Amino acid sequence: MSNQKDAGEKARQNIHEYLAEFDDIPGTRVYTAKRARRGYWINQFAMSLMKADNRERFKADEKAYLDEWNISDEAKEALLARDYNRLLDLGGNVYFLSKLFSTDGFSFAQAVSTMTDMTFPEYQQMMLNGGRSPEGNRSIKGGY
Amino acid sequence: MARITAGVGSSHVPLLGVAVDQGKWQDDYFGPIFKGYEWTREWEKETKPDVVILVYNDHASAFDANIIPTFAIGCGEHYKSADEGWGPRPVPDVEGHADLAWHIAQSLILDDFDMTIINEMDVDHGLTVPLSMMFGQPEKWPVKVVPLAVNVVTYPVPSGNRCWALGEAIARAVESFPEDLNVQIWGTGGMSHQLQGPRAGLLNREWDNKFLDLLEADNDDVRHIPHIEYLRETGSEGIEMVMWLIMRGALGKKVKRLNRHYHIPCSNTAIGHIVLEPAD
Image (cartoon, rainbow over all chains, first blue to last red):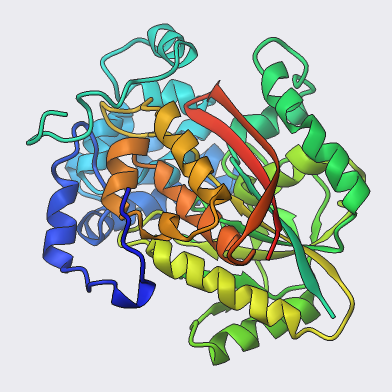
């Protein structure tokens, strides 16, 4: 942790360096402006599932409901397949996507486990054992 | 005069709301978590705050991808529980304190914090779970609430330094409110957790406890932790802990710790909470 003392002396952060560091975290897609722009309609679609009527219409015919939105075919496919890692790559954000897995009756932990290489019971056991260790999971380049 | 009498930092995991709503708080899984909050629930009953300034993040409930306020303050009379995709939580409506909220909003803007003002919104688990953890299941919440929503989802989120400074400005604003009010400030979210990608499930007991140590310390070192450190050490959603710094900044230089609890896991998350009193 930093020991920089004086708030007034805080150096201005360079936005390019700030953003570049985010790509160095293993297995993580930080929700940057770039991703937010790309995934805008995926996230707005997911938001629409906060209304019970929309959830019913979506469940009745998922493809038809998705066709009402300005979403690429690739993203529609990922949504229909509930491929959450793919959706993160396409600019989806987990808090928005949670409306989709809630509509499916999935808990946060259950949905989140599908993004890892574990089954849900294996994931639950890992959490009970203290979670995934940060050891070796902090930096791709640094390997620590 | 209104005064900030205490600060609370607390996780706001949605599953805790489910545990309360479905009466599971005494089972083997949730028992140790709720036991950790027992002291704090009793303390809240004794100290009887009039108002809680509740710092939290909206999880794509009141705000969609369209409008992304960095700092937004609720100045309304009341707020309903949001439907987050499984129906609204069965909790009482949250009563606002519009007079105090508007006073804080105006004071903050004059103090160089350009707040977004919200008149109507629904509040999600980020706000209602901490209320349930502190007050259980009353028919009516025993406090009025000034919601303060922080963007901790779309990057860049505000720096820890800025959050701390906002807390200081909130304390100045509260002190200049003429009515005699017992005000608490709560910072919520965290602690370590990651809800996305192959690294999901990351927890960091050691770092979280260092963070709690720094909150208790008689200095402001904690405000300078950069975003990348939260991301690397505490998972992509651990960044919510910057919201605890708004609470800590409002308490002044020295604090006295009244309670502290830490437990792993709750769903995907490390649960922690801390109760602090200003001691300047």
